Image 1: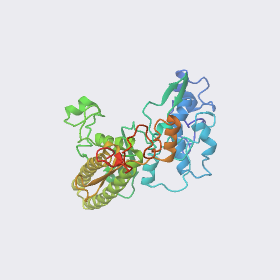
Image 2: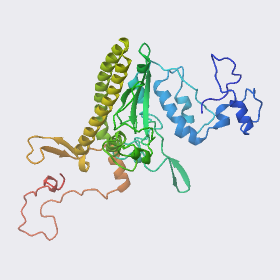
Image 3: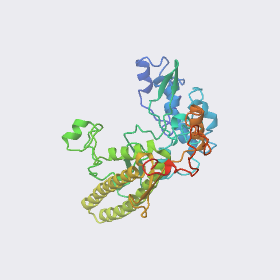
Image 4: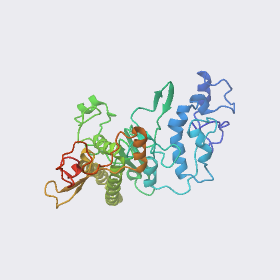
Length: 395
């Protein structure tokens, strides 16, 4: 959407294009000028920007640019109306200069953005629920009284099938140069495992046998799980299990998943350093076969570690938040060796509920003893036990 005019394109150091990019458009009726017409705009010819293109696609780029761009390179406020889809002529630049060199961790964070702290933020309105979820379940558009409304298409979306961040490294043997940090499902909550370009296998929970998720193909190759068949031996399903805990209990579950992912990433990074060192020494000794075996063993082990940790994490989240409560270990409690507490919601959410329901849920003040009509004269004035303190009522 941001590749517009670029003709003439006759300096290879500054511009590269397919030789038929203009003639193809002319032949198919997309452009009515000449092949060297400088008014030719790639975006306007092949994919004219629309409200949907700006709000559902370009807004995600705006979010990333806003987070990393040098202010002299990009003015987020100036392009907000374009990201909103309200001014389609206020196009953004093709690229920006970052204010600092990006780390891999920062790139993962960028790919997990949900428009935090911006006009597009979906965290605060009623659709976010009591736990500030940025996700919506009724599609990108919905109708009300003849008008069309939208939900934001966040960067870290629940509809992701798989994702990766690539590291290209110099000064190492070619099979080690390309390193891919790969994950299944939503980038925000999934673990990412490091895979060398020279590895020839992955752990079975990550294996897809070139099936691109086709169910029949996976069955034919003996791979467990597909989109409609659940399996705990599928990295995609495990990522979904954990992510679903966050989707329903964002405020409580999200910090635990972020912590687990950071810890796993640190462990995988340490294992990567060891594998790199071992493989590099093998390559230097002329043992290419042994070096490639090391890279493959590392890929398999990384997948196994991620699968084991995410299985345990899902179990921890399920136990911690079963029935909507918050369960914590308490060895002194004689039954479950735990304590169970209710979730705590914000004052802003409470205000939304009261504004929506009035006095429907309002608890009236307790009457003084003897104030109830028809109460026997012998009724004692001792306080009764709160029903909320009885096991099984509130806990």
